[in-house]
Length: 602
Image (cartoon, rainbow, N blue to C red; front, top):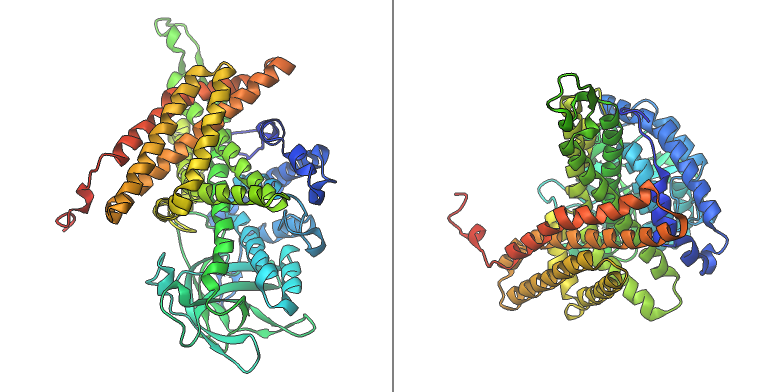
């Protein structure tokens, strides 16, 4: 690997999937994945690595520099190499890795889809948004689209023949989805409506590598109520689809413009007009007024996907920075400071560079562990035969999703900026890849619900479910893990994490008390610090679990750099990162309401 080319290190990925989580063993117990074993998964990862390094990596910078173009007819031309890359993914079944194989998907568990997505997003995040949105939209259609159309639409999308998007945001409405004004008027054809309106910030709103694109559009039917409860969901194809499945005339969904933005320039972020240049037909998905409920099926999956994007950026940034620090010769070793004949050394020998690399390493590896565990919960939630266990796992996924989305997207950006700092002045130059990672990463804390909204969801909804049942169930499991870790010789680390868990519980109780006192604004003012506190504790628990696994494997196999690194990760986390959680807890419970003073910001 060079400091300018993308490369994948499968060693840590194998550690998490097989040694830590035992994904292959756990999923083999369920009939759906009984025929898949570690050999199959490892072969899949090897091919994913090849595609990332040989197909997507080389087009990432090109996509960023050239971007997308819009012609007078409202058609988008994507950057050079994008069409060929899409063809490669479609022919190999990589558009929808976890979709049913009989419908053109890869037939893999969601856990494998997550790690494949991490690897490919790390090589070209902007490109991977196209298949990600297509697969997400297809899953909603497969479950809730018109019965006579759902399988054919989903098959075309899962296979990569068609693309897909998600159309929520409108000018002036932004994150307040309930303010949407798009209209849907029934026609004489059952289930078909005429859609009128405009949507903005639509990722992958158009492209030139599929024959059709299906937009999932939120709109309001006549006499529907105000707010989100009055919204319905429609599938709106770029080209109308005939009864025999062939494509008909152009539908009235057109790109009106492409945004010129900070990053992800290879992805066409479009303003879409519906019914502006002619009638626009849309097919009702589900029932009227069910739109926000169905869209959130895609939104929750998308939020986990955004967390993966953040982690992928972090892993890529760390990979680039580590290689650069090994190759870049500058300055003498500090221990040779008084030696006039000392030779210059690689900057990886300088303590502050090692500090920055350690932050990048620990964050990227613990985030990967957290997200793959979340994905495995998702798989087991669907495959378990025990209803109580399914419900428990669903609760865990619901609780962790906003934390993962916000924590991993924010840390992905932070790690990318640390990579720039590691490169020094060269990191700020477009010749090297890390400045693009900073620009690409920033959007992840904004779209699919800003991280402030994730915090409000966590505090205002997830912590209140069952009177705090989801949090209490997690806390009991965490305390059990800490007890086992103490017995295994990790007493100091377990003790420090135990104090952080208790502080987190205290912060949660404090916020609940504010809610009961109807001091909602005061509670929400501390929602984001609480989420970051929770995210820090979760990552610390992952560092501890990985160190436990590494200790066991060292006894079985002997030491290795990877296993030694897991122990060092835990030591560093407890000493340098976990104190942030304690500090955030003090902020949350401080009762400071200074930001609510109406005289501020006048």
